[in-house]
Image 1: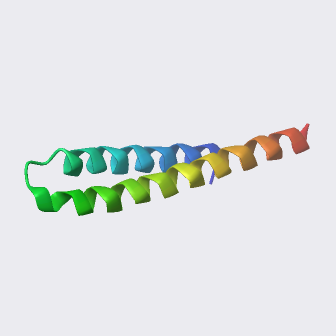
Image 2 (image 1 turned 135 degrees about the horizontal axis):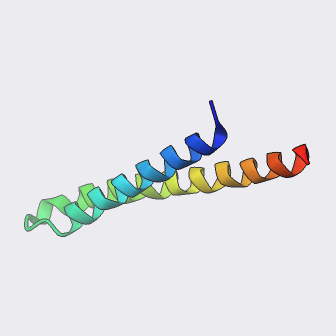
Image 3 (image 1 turned 60 degrees about the horizontal axis):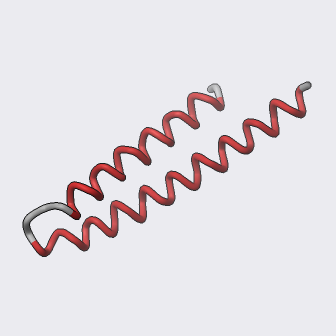
Length: 65
């Protein structure tokens, strides 16, 4: 599997989780803010993973040259 596809997939997941965190944060029910924290934390983890994958991909490209 291509490393670039994996990175795009991880960033897409981070975007979806961010959108869910925002939706829960803006929900009119006060009990939903806890879910926003969970989704936001997950989005942050996926964003960090995506950045690490992108850096690893760039290092691999430089090593091939």
